[in-house]
Length: 111
Length: 113
Image 1 (tube, rainbow over the protein chains, first blue to last red):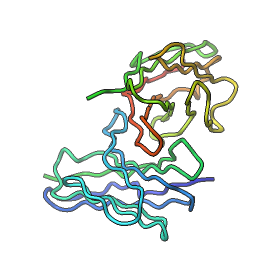
Image 2: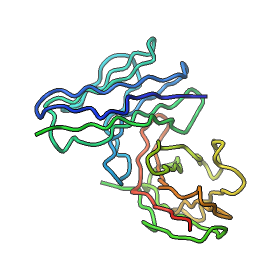
Image 3: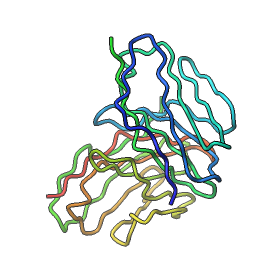
Image 4: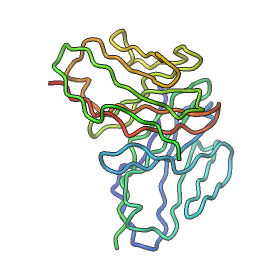
């Protein structure tokens, strides 16, 4: 059974600070990793994708992948109140087509 | 920016009735998906579809479920005889090529009474 684990939170971060979100996964053959943002009652919105070990930066967002540790993280710099949402980690396993999602981390940015 | 569109946004159906959820994937995308999210729970994969056939399905996608691409633009999910536990948000997603991210539609909220 493929599992993706996230701390459900809530994670409370002051405005302007760095928010750090973490995710671990069980399938060692996983190839592709994604972070989605989901506002309450809305659909998942793609934030970042990462496919190889290391860091990938896009604006205020940095995704980090460590396949040896089976660990993915998302850093949000200069956090804004509009970043308050649930952040979903999603993993595409080796040989699989569908994504396995974690339960998500509820992030609250305090003004 | 191109979007995945889903209709209806909310569907209310009596238990035991058939329901069809509709999706129009992004026009140049080749891979199509259905997911569901029961209230308060995680997003769960149902089925993927490529080249006019199912490429992968989860344990949730049993004989009550079917998918179809009836024409060049629509992608549908049919639930044959709905149960109370089918109440959920159903998301359609699509992607252009292998290893590209999936993009989600706004979802259909299905309520079974």
